[in-house]
Image 1 (spheres, rainbow, N blue to C red):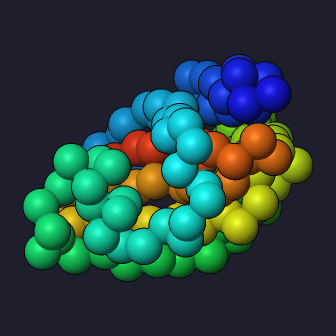
Image 2 (cartoon, one colour):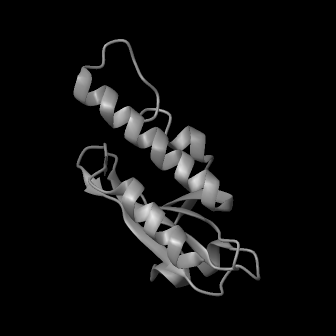
Length: 133
């Protein structure tokens, strides 16, 4: 079951990049049997290999994708296609995961994890990096 979810996420995020001061691709994340307990900040830092004092900010998924999954009147055709692909990615995440949260880890060079629970009790989602100076 979880393999289907990760495959759908892989397909939906393929060739998409997160726009920031640099462009990073999305990678699928899967932590098996980790959804029994709540995902605390400390647990997330352990799972991602960050030091315990690293800053974490959480944001809503719709807020995180607000600039990429919404068409603007000044968008050209390529940008409109990207918006549709981001909408599809957002739908895929929401259709296959529950209790989704976006975690921004660190400052300036920020690791982003969009993580939710699978029906079979795993934690899954996608990750990327953004640069904000």
